[in-house]
Length: 270
Image 1 (spheres, rainbow, N blue to C red):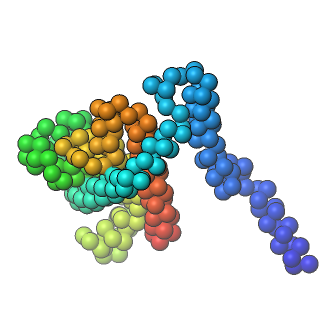
Image 2 (cartoon, rainbow, N blue to C red):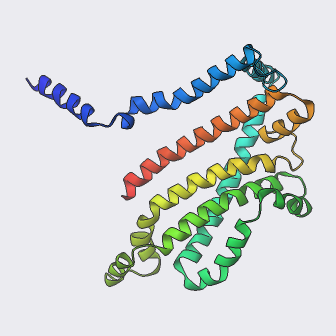
Image 3 (tube, rainbow, N blue to C red):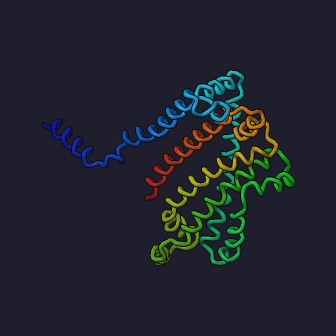
């Protein structure tokens, strides 16, 4: 009797869950569009609708990946790019959170730093390249700095704006309990902006991957961004597409890791 009741309850709960909110539907839906694109890609290349010099067939991209794996180069390209993104994202995030706290929690900090940071945010990524080459030359420092710049602004903007708009009633309630400074921030303001912090981290990580390609134009000899540039020079369209696919996959994987982190943090703080 109990087993039947449990089964009935589970079935009823599944029926109440909207179709597009079910886990199985989300997983299937996530694969649907890529499969459609892959099928269309195969069709237009095998039928000759699009010539190979404009779009190679999928098998050519797979063969390019196998060739690089056999030469021991593909994993090295991936590892170097992931390392650059991780280090740049880490430094950019730490500095961004510090400035977000200054601007978001202090009126003086807002007056002094917000205007210049808004102006710097409008500078395109490639505009930093010649300056970084002159200052830091073409080593890893210039590449990581450019990636850090890319990660900085989404995190800073999101968190600073969230801190400025924390419910003043919550802050006042904390002060009535004797909370000041760090204790007020840790107990009241930080929990209020945790969702914004995680959202900023996800945006900053996505921006770090975007800045990676520009960073690896700074005299790099390895990495996925360099592979894009080198493949364009040599006319290897299959490798260009391979690099794009790998960047998309790595961006998706790292975003998925942050989603898991987001769930853990929200479960802890909210």
